[in-house]
Image (cartoon, one colour):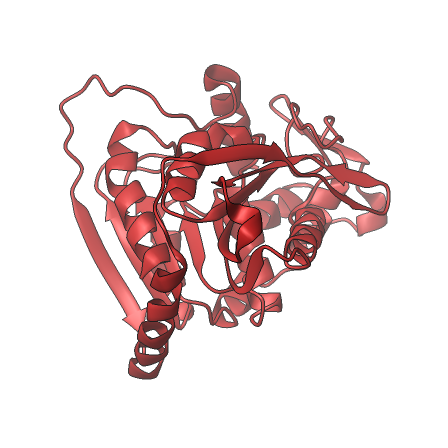
Length: 315
């Protein structure tokens, strides 16, 4: 699993793989935008855009509060960051779906910016999503994109039951593997998602697990070891078997929500070409290209990503 090995290695070096850091080079990223939007979808988006803008009231007065989602035997730890008066109105929501071996608090800069824009932003830790997860499962042996999809589904169900949430304007931003999980949710629940934002989604994951499975001799699933170790990355076999059961190209074709992908051309973990291909399948998709961008949210990446995401969500 090249993707898993690479992500874990970056995580060990920089504390989880994705962070904000001060750029010391002279690289100036350039932005390119590719779109695949039908005229009908564009008209529908423009009509709903006016409604979205009317919900947003920018403010510097925001609060952060713990918010736990409980289902079955799991307690998903998370936080709501939102304008202080959020309980007196219905707010548009942005859910953050974090990446492999990350936690949601690695995206606090983005979360706070979106909250100041007027959104109620919810970040949470997936069960087993990280060795530092506050939701449990730190050995990561019971985690897969499908288990994370179940987590995300329960999160959305709980949030949309709250009186202060505008359930017609709930968007998801997924990062890396979290982008894959967000894509799965959007395809399965088109009626629940308003907009989908993806930051270097690792659609390569599915080719990667197929290669790993073939290298193991393509045994029956019950013959797979309970855990698979790849250069210090230990995962349960459920990670492999669940991914093998997904046709990601079919998933992409079933996403009808307006979709924004932000991806860098120098991403060696989640190759840029996978996002180029994805926007040809997702009916209402736009790709923002960060020239020279890698698989990390550094200052240069954020110069492009932040305004692109803010504008996309507010449109």
